[in-house]
Length: 243
Image (cartoon, rainbow, N blue to C red; front, top):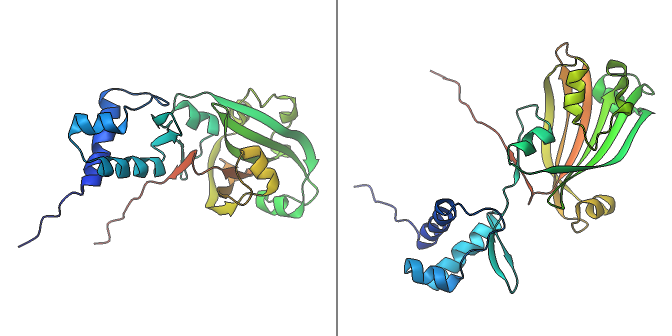
C-alpha cells in the first residue's frame, strides 16, 4: 500500500503566508502583521511560522528590516533565456519603471574577440553601448552591447537613457529573429560591485550572446552582469515524443 506523504508544517505555513498576501492584494513593500499576530490568527506554532518566513526571505518573496518587521518583496525581473526580449519589454510586464544610466555610447573599432562574435573583421566599426539598469533606485544589471555599425549607422544620435535599443533597431528596419546565448555564474569585479552596489566577489549572473537579423547577419554581441536577488532566468521545457 502506497504511503501518503504528509505536508510539513513549514510548507503549510509558507502556503498560508502567500495566500494571505494574494487574498489581501498586498503590494510590494507592504508590511506583514507581526509573527505574534499571525500565529494568533492562524493558531500556528511560532517557530514553524518563523522558519517559513525565513524560507520566503531566502526565496526573495519577503524581506525583513531590522527593528521594523517583514515586508512583501518586489518581484524579480524575469528573463526568458529562449526569447529575444529587451530589458525594457521585460520590465513593462512587471509594472515597474526602468531607469537607465548610459555609461558609454560611442563609435569605436572592435577587437578580435568582438569581431569573431559578430563575424566581422578586427578593426571594423561597432557602436558600443554600456548601460546600468536600475529599478526603484536598486541596480539590476549592467548591459554591455556591441552593435554591427555597418548594418545600422546613426545609432550614436540616439539617447539610450530614454530610448530602447531594440525599438530603435526595429525603426531602422532591422528584424531581430534569432541568436545564441549562454548564462553562467561569475563574480563581481571591483567596478561591477561599485555599479551594482554589491560586495566585490559576490556571485552574479553572466549572460552573453549574439543576436542575428532575419538574414542571419550578426547585429549585436552582448554581455550582461545581473544581480541574482533582482533578476530571475526562466526557460520552458518541452519533450519530444520518442515513441
